[in-house]
Length: 286
Image 1 (cartoon, rainbow, N blue to C red):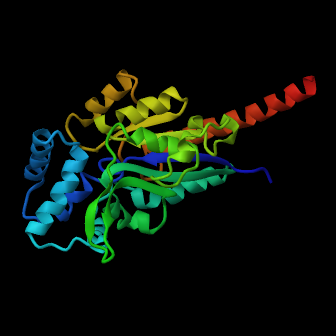
Image 2: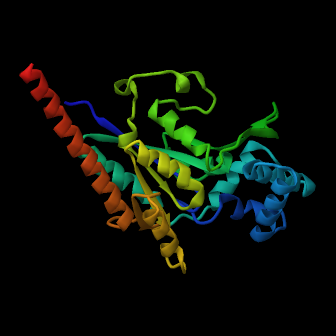
Image 3: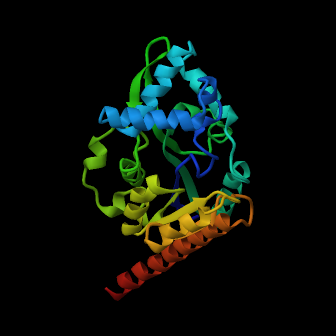
């Protein structure tokens, strides 16, 4: 049997697979704040301190939790992933699309690249079900008692690009900077950019979308169903050459985004078959 071709699909999380920001489901309400109040303070804290907004929200999560005497252990963050609300079809989507790819002798690897809180994402049902090859997301460092000490990783809209390179080179961690900078022939990269898909929902995903498009990959912009102006905003991603496709955030079988991904799988599969025969023809000609 021929070796399986690998395709990687990288997803933003908040607003892409799940509704809203993951911190808004239960963590921020437990702080006694509404989401608008919290994110407004995040912006003002970032502005007042010349601070990255991701570090600002991570700082405020801990600061506000300590003020409320809330527990800040890893497991306490993880439990907040249980309250996440997905877009339609998400929990069944992975089996559907993996089966479709498998029937074409293609292996799909799914990744998260998110500014959201990794520990909370790890507590979601789809992470617990091990749907993802790796989760790249903003996370904390913990002490020997598993209590949060400091931000370990902050992923913002521009640094998302780095993690596409890590996927391209088969690096499944956020700390190894030796392999990511090492020169390798394209044929040695585990997953070519042209065999990668990025799915996101908005402005914070634009740099990753643009980079992947430039490298021959594919980007998809999603928008929430039944939300006034959402489709029109997503349409701008197409018009400005940020996304190759847009679709409603509905992952149920035969939905628009599932059909788009199936089509991309078909295109990559067909291209791989054609290139194989082209290489054979060159050898025969020699």
